Amino acid sequence: MFSPELVDERILNRLTKQAGFRQSAVTFLFTGEEVEKKKALALAFAKALNCSNAANPVLMCECSICARIEKGAHPDVKWYGLDEDANSIKIQEAREFRNWLSLKPFEGKIKVGIFNAADRLTPESQNALLKSLEEPPPGNVIILLVSQARSLFDTIVSRSIEIKIPPFAPGEVERILIKEGAEREEASFLARVSGGSLVTAKLAREERWYEERKKWVDQLTANPRVFLEQSHTSTRNQVMHVFDFMIEWVRDLLVFQAMHEPSLTVHSFAARKMEQIAQARDFRSICDLFENMTEIRKSIDENANQKLALTQTEIILEQFFNKGPQ
Image (cartoon, rainbow, N blue to C red; front, side, top):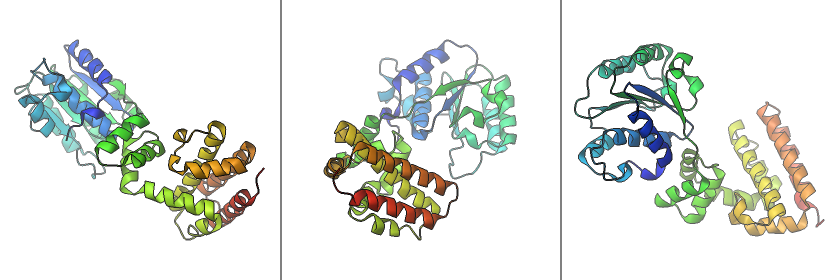
């Protein structure tokens, strides 16, 4: 389902004007980590190029052309690589695209070919695609959705216009999650913990990070040794996840100690606990804890002995939480 709130209207307007001034075919690279945002922009762009109802904003248009483009049923807007479970986009799809590109528009104004997750194009597929990009017939717009331009051949990149798609602001992620049914406090937490990444926020919601983090904050502050003992039999990735949480929690303590403003922290739901710790510890001791935790996480990432690292962390955390007010 098309979601207008995923589309950056400023970029869409710039793209539409840019394509409108060109008589020849043009290839765009949409780069960035936000998969859904890139897809939504590509779809909105295809609608803007072909919509016959100029009186209405394209994001809200419900004309038959826009409706069919949205449903994937318009003959002049073609998606490739939609099977995201596939490890690669095979040469067959690139050749099929080349044949489709040579045809005149069936009923629309401009044909739009979109390669989803074009990072998965095999070298053979990229070579086949390059032949299409060298002299594409007029009346075509080609869109390649990739995380980074360097994932494609330089010869493809040099024939394309790169459009960098910025990440969402945390407030935008929060509004989208609330619209999808999340409670406001959970949506606010997920927007901050994801750093504005809608993909990460949605995954975190599926994995119930909000409930997990509330439990972890309680366990960590009550008894760090018992909390970390659970990780002694965990995989390295699971341990890294726990360390990411602890580092983020200590960073919140630093922010709260400096600003005394819970809304600036990731774990704002634990404002009372942060206030208690801030009253009992000075800024320097929290900084020392942050530096120690960061160094230990780095050592685990570099394949240090996991159990020794966890034991060291237990000692450091116990010393921090068991000290009296300073």
